[in-house]
Length: 292
Length: 270
Image (cartoon, rainbow over all chains, first blue to last red; front, top):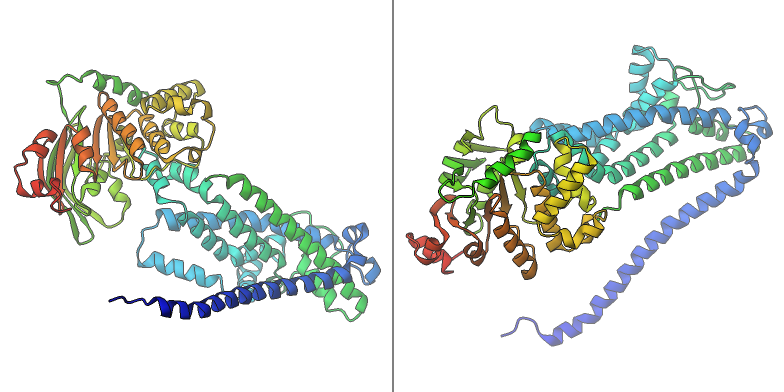
């Protein structure tokens, strides 16, 4: 006897094909909705802020007058911040990921550490701000300097970088490790020559996403007391500074409607910086990614 | 490092039948993965310039055994061993025996071709480079010699800078053999090297093994009994972590002394 009857199969066929088509349109609708929200946002910001964009806007300091307000201090400040955050968080993050994946024994303690790193990635940024205020600003007496803010931001994005790097390292095929160890390579030689080159695209993607988060974060900066209006450029990492999101936050909370447009112009600059960072990541990724 | 490179010619010159010496002496080897007793009281003597085949059904411990010979098995956590494996008279489990040193003397070819995502040249030069050879001229010579040794020089000599993934699977496996030859080993371990290859590539690798045994001692794990019969001088039959029988390949296949060996090679199980 046969278990599958042709007649029933034919009868059910229509229903299956309809469900197939319906789900296709559901997923398409989800994509379009997300795209629509993004387009509206971009359109609003560009239409509002484009008029304020000029060389003067980039080269002026903040001002009480909307038509003279510029973003120079915040832009340079954000770049300084990134110069502290990028090396600290990437070196510490990739280092921890290598240790956890390649050196640490797989036991309860390390799996407990792994779990907590993933959890840390979900802690609200304002909490990291408080941590930074306690440790870097007060205990280490760094004040509201670039260094204090940079370390705080590094702590904030460290879990994301560690988790992304761990994933990237874990994705390197075990056969490549075997081949390297099988020829008498040490662990370090295997990591440098085989594992890191193969993992770099993944590590970079995660790191750049994390850095993009750091460049847009406001809460920790407010908590550690980063000022808004600054009329000079920092000369070193111990100077105080302001950053793009702080400046945008300040402008958008002002009562004059003209400042809303200035804030929109600031957002365009912030997004341009993000776009620039992401394209660097894409370039580096493509350079390393021509493997298979 | 230079001593490693020059040693080879000495062992290659002693291919005389009477002068054959043991490369590996395994004495009462036991191995556990956690609580799983994977190898039980293994006693095997592997001679130089011979091809020793290890056959047996899946899960019999043959791969585990070959990976123990260069201590790759230790990359798996929770492995415990007892007993001895003497490589050229020295116990490889000795505290002061570095795995890196052992693995420069004992090359390995794996089941799936696993070239690095680098150029063909860099793949073959990887071993010499990690052992400190930087001179471009010497590296060039090692690469050519190894690729010739693996019978693939003519196929790839004009595309040494191409990615090793751009060639066929059978060619990749011979690149991996060349890569193992480049560290000028004494022994080559092969863990089912043809199981992922088509019949023609398999034939090429088998011919290569015959060629290589003049200079190297080869231990090959295989699922394919015909292959063992074709290419090996001695065959060990593993079953449930034990060596059931170890003898000349002719004897194993024509006149096995153990009933289980006979059942296995005649295809009654496995």
